[in-house]
Length: 218
Length: 218
DNA sequence: GCAGAACATGACCGCTCGGTCAACTTGCTA
DNA sequence: TAGCAAGTTGACCGAGCGGTCATGTTCTGC
Image (cartoon, rainbow over all chains, first blue to last red; front, side, top):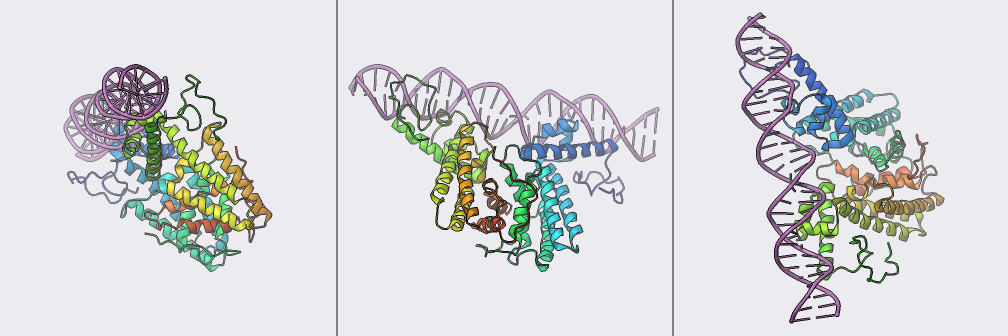
């Protein structure tokens, strides 16, 4: 989001760069609108999942539909922008927790915090199978790799069973949210209960051999 | 759902009954078509989730769109019919397993078999929050109650931790399928691995207190 | 304060969807 | 085998979607 060293605006018309990092800085009102759209989209996606309509997002942001498309060429691009935020949050969360004195507490906090965020924003937006090589794929991999490190530490500390990998944990990260989803009107914090169950399933105590080898991350 | 004592087909025109059990028998071709539509819908829903289009289903079944609507007044009604099949399968599966000598094996088999079916047919169709009082709500409750009994037996046998309820297990039933869903091209049997993790999370060995009271089924 | 680039707008497009219906075909019954 | 209810068909409808674009508005560097 930082403006970066501005290339002098002499450049005639490069490839339509509205992306945050690149290009020349946005006009003041444009920047405002962009942020409003992102916020509205986040809320709308959280409420209706990926089927949230652009019109609804525009309405919520207080702009016209065309404005949304000026900032995000396509609905997918908008969803990706939101997902990118979430991914970065999770990455830095995991990064912050890494190397903590109490590896068990760190893993618990990560799983709890992650599930909490995923619960609030609805899973679908972040946890989508992305096109290979896409920006989202890269951001997901970043989260994944960070989780792997966290789990490695936890395993070394003996709080995670030896046959469970970081990829396993990454895949199971959303399970508490999904579980709660099958209730019409779930208690708002019920997902915590299933974080507990999952975490106990990851513990070495009384672990029985798993019936399938661990998956590799693409 | 059992056919009950058949009212003689003299009844002139009761409320538009195309439902399987009730009403007068279908014409031969109509019955054939109905079955074809159900099969096609099952496959189409499995491939594309609930967004599968009626046109696609009709095409796959080899009938016109109108025919689909003659048998199922609405798309939701069709989905419900499919979900009903699945629910009945799970109910009778659990019923069969109940009272088994080895309660642990029974629970494992149920979770495995259930996850396998849910994996094949895609979760979405069965596990939808149904309208209260609807047929689907009733069928889901049937599955749920059967799971509760199964889990009660397992708990009594000491293979499930005392603080976990049948409702918990019901909600977690789909977790393995969802976990695998975040992989672009998952190994076809990977879900079994997560059935293992979940089951270990349900075991009494090394269980830590859960951070939220168990939910009640609506 | 002015010019013009950057931006916002909303009517509009093409498309797909769930659902309807008048006209036609077919299986059943007597 | 004739007659008719039951069933089938596919063109059609209106709504909503993602996305476009000519036109009008607003910010900003000079």
